[in-house]
Amino acid sequence: MIVGTDGPAVVLSAETAYWLEKLCKVSTLRMRLRDGRHVRVSQELLDLRQAAMSFDPTQLPTDAAVGSRSAEEARWLEQRDWWSVAEAADSLGIGERAVRLACSQDRLDAERVGGRWRITQTALNDFKTGRTGTR
View 1: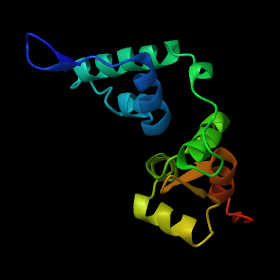
View 2 (view 1 turned 180 degrees about the horizontal axis):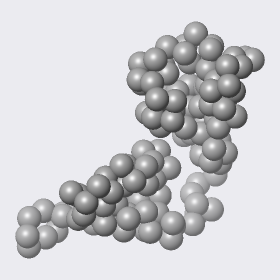
View 3 (view 1 turned 90 degrees about the horizontal axis):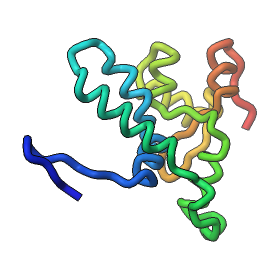
């Protein structure tokens, strides 16, 4: 729903906030914007995170077809220790393209979920210490 008297604003459900947090890592974005220049945006992202945390994921449907995109994403979301390409690149101090290349060459153990690479914390730690994935 779009509302607002000082310009457009969007009202989101807690479920939408939950998925934004889980799939887009809004909390990571908020941390990047804590430089004092984006106070309003940072506060709104914090509000979004609080709404996401108020959502009970047990309310989500559990009947996603096995092998479907939503079933694959749900499995990854349950692990809670995966990193996106952007987050892995930040952590490693390299570019996103280098992370994607490492994933596609099996030098960084990762799995494609919904067309995107998902990297576990363990795989990221192994890559940092020079151990390659064992797919």
